[in-house]
Length: 547
Image (cartoon, rainbow, N blue to C red):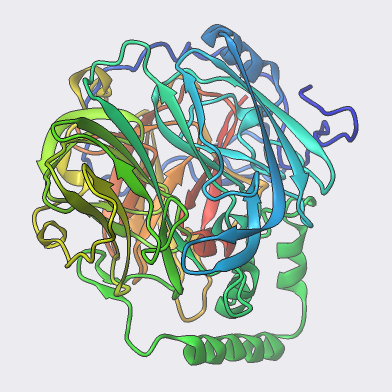
């Protein structure tokens, strides 16, 4: 189903998908109430199981993304008014302000054209692939039906060059989301676009809305591409973008002798050392090393600070700013010069309003803020955390002449991170002890670039089992010297102590975070680091709903 007739892009019996039946899950319904947990259990249940190689406590069969349980869950959400869209992924030339670059984008622009619907609408979007590689479309943060999640080799076959694919699902929950590929390191090109799901009963009062997408940029500059950068780092062992569902990883592991592998590792290390910046990329806020990749440009809504986007308003206007970090390897610190911000949402879910001077966004995170505009010209300042570079957009109430801005004091003022927020009362998880605890230790090193979860690089046949209706606790334990933004598909989780509902959370080096979720959306769902070079190198896995 959902196939384009001109080329079959979704086949049955995907090897990594599994098959079978599960008793129907409960309807997602409205935002559930709740409260987070902060237990630090070390006893890990739900150990990973390979399809066809069962663990003692896990079955061999899992719900297929194309199974009747997935269709039944979507039917309970109910169809709404159909909103039709089309995205064409193509190689193009983009003007990013400082220069023109050859890259890939949707509809020849970056960010791609905004997708905006109302909660309850049915999205019907056709992705046409004019790229020289296969691709897919992932709906970041959306709690959607599993077969529309856009993970090649797991929920669908890749959309080949010249083919198209129809995505169709009900957008049930309001919030700030975005779309991007889930194929290799394509995310670090220009392939991303904001997705806004409006609340038909919007409680916030504001005059204007400003959608702001942040990005780090290297594609087409000095011969660099995300693929050459991944090769330089020595990653690419994940192989999830391949149509064979990971055969590349198996072949790579078997290739060559041990001595040959050591020589290749040494060569990669020498190349990384040679290409490393003269000054270390360090951030106390992130717990040390800030990133693996140096970028020549940082962008706000596709523009470098040499030619920034200008947003116009009137003095006294109340503006809702929706912030999205679409970067590949960079956390951003954001502040609006001359203003304090009131945070109202993170990752699409409302929080108890909190005032701050600045915010920190890891890759994949989103924040909604409200500001009441003063009279004048103000920078929306965006600092690449720990990398010594910045980006900018401009908020104006008057005039047209360009202005040079000093570094706004708000960037160095009070800074808010997600762990300091509380979920709004009506979206907190109901207090409950977990039925299952899954321990995910983040492993690997920058030197070897062998990122993994529990020491196992990504294998699409490997699953962490859960059952419908369970309260599941994922215990993320960062055993590395690097920070990681961990993202869960198809669900949201609660941070400890009544913290916010999120789908992406920052793990500092050698720290642990327990997150709780309700298993209410059947299928096979990715869990991964949203540093695209870490995930593609192996730091991802799958939660699988048992039959």
